[in-house]
Structures are given as C-alpha cells and as structure tokens.
Length: 331
Ligand SMILES: C[S@@+](CC[C@H](N)C(=O)[O-])C[C@H]1O[C@@H](n2cnc3c(N)ncnc32)[C@H](O)[C@@H]1O
Image (cartoon, rainbow, N blue to C red; front, side, top):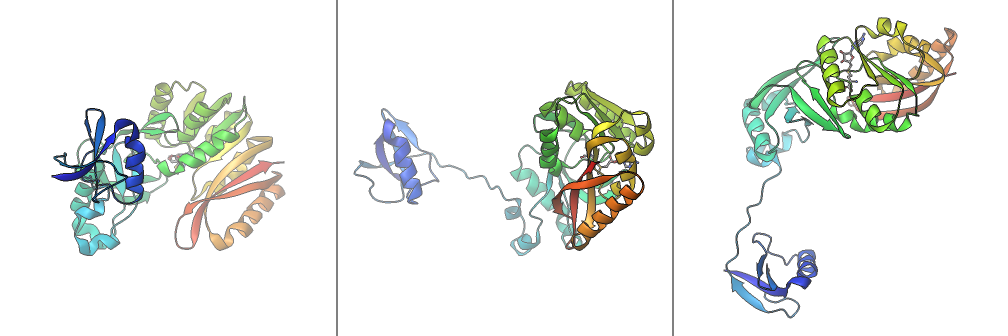
C-alpha cells in the first residue's frame, strides 16, 4: 500500500510539480487516474488539504543510465566517462589497467544504451588514411553504420574510414558561413560530412569532395545519393594533385590536423582573393600563435599573400596541445 493524495485531474500537474520541488513526490510509484481524480503517491502524511488514501499503485522500475554502476565498485573511479557514438556503434578507449574488464565494460554499455548494437575498443588512429584500429568487445553485427548529424544521414564504417562525430559543431559553423553560389573544396573529406552538412544548410554552387582512401570515396558516393546532394562532386586521390583541374574556390576545408599545414600553399593557390581556408592543426598551446604567424609569413613570401581572420580551439589533444582551426583569408 502506498500513501497518496487524491487530486482533481485539472490540478494534477501543479500539485505534482510542487510535491516534486519539495522532495515529497514518491517517484517509485506510478501516478494513476481514478475517475475525475489522480492518485499521486507521496512521501508525507498530508498535502495541501487534499484527501489522503492508501492505495495499490504500480511500482516504477528506474533504468540505470551510468554504465559504470554495472562494474565493480573499486574500479568505477578510473573507468572512462566519455566515448563516441557513431550510428548504432560505441567506440571507447580503455586504459591497459582496465583491459581485464573490457567485456564487462562493453556489456554494461549495451545495457544502458538501448540503441547501440556493437561496442568497439579504440586502438588509436594509424597511418596516412587515419584509420582506427578497432576490436569488438560486445554486441554483434558489422562495423558499417548510419549516423545522423544536423539533418544529414551518413553511411560510414569506422574500421575502414576516418569519421569524427565530435566535429558536428564545427561543421555547422562552417555551413553557417557559406554564402549562396560558393565554390568549395574539401581536400580531406572522408565520407563527406562537411560537404553534406554544408549542402543541407546552405546553397553552394559546387562542393568538390576529395579523399585518398578508396573506401571513403565509395561511402562519399553512397552518401551523396542517399542525401540527394547532387552539388557534391566526389573525387578519389591525393588532394594536391586532384585540385589541379578544379576552378578557384571561395572556401577550402583542410581537416587533416596532423599535416594539413604542409598543403596550405596548394590550398591558397586554389583560393580566390577574399576566399577563406579552414585549416585544422594540432599544436602545442604555447606555440600556436608564433608558429601560425611564421606559416603565414612563409606563404606571403611565396607570393600567396594572406592573413589570419580567426582561430578556434576545437578540443584538447594532450595535456599541452590542442586541435585548432585557423581561418586564413587570401589577400
Ligand atoms: C582527419 S580525416 C577527415 C575526414 C573528414 N573531414 C571528417 O570530418 O570525418 C582526414 C582524411 O584525409 C584523407 N587523406 C590523407 N591524406 C590525403 C591526401 N594527401 N589527399 C586526400 N586525402 C587525404 C584520409 O584518408 C582521411 O579520410
């Protein structure tokens, strides 16, 4: 039996809210309709002069939302508190000391994330194509998935191509800057998330989407068809070669943070005067200003006059380094 207040239906919501605000609502039992009244379970003996009754109410099972609660208490503090969700996959980094618990970690993540099908342990990004080493630790099925972001659906496979769901805000930021009729080049496009989000939220004339990875090129083509984004031109190859035949661009995206700066001359030579290059770069925080000034001086000396219009810190990369985006305008 549960103690309840009998409240006219019309007054149910305000009564429930004030009980909740005062910590007097019994959240372990379900509020139930009875004729024109609601029976609201309470943790006190009286409330607001409403009639009090003892009733049988259905018990509510509370879903645990923190996967760490399913693991031994003595390791909870050192368990990762963040991971990436790509479509119906979770990708999680696990420190060496926690490796004996990897299956339990995977199972616990599946338990609290009902939409997730497969949990993969992240072994880091390797090589020129920036492909992640992944080991399935719980769940079933292939590593290919469909990821939704900013109104776009993208097919991707993190075991074959690079894809970073944490860039969603940066992609929307770039899309918000695009003016009607722009020509855009994405030199390191992956499965084309920047081009797709841009075409969904802006009206460029053409977006040339280049990647060296054959699998990325195949996903790009599927994503263009899936989103009916006919203004995106998929291209496979080395960006420094592939850009040669392209028209001058209003905007060039360079999302290859380890080495994009080595391609800045190629990007600027393909950018119209007044156009902009979004260059991603990992840098020591203490050096980010001086190294960027040097890079821009270098470009100017080689006849590619330009200036920095904005610098954004995207995320922390290590205790001393961050991933930045530099917006560089061609003069
Ligand atoms: C960091 S990923 C960025 C992917 C994509 N922009 C995203 O947000 O998911 C860099 C991409 O550059 C590609 N890449 C590396 N070197 C390249 C090159 N020389 N020319 C074209 N693409 C290259 C890799 O295959 C990879 O897909």
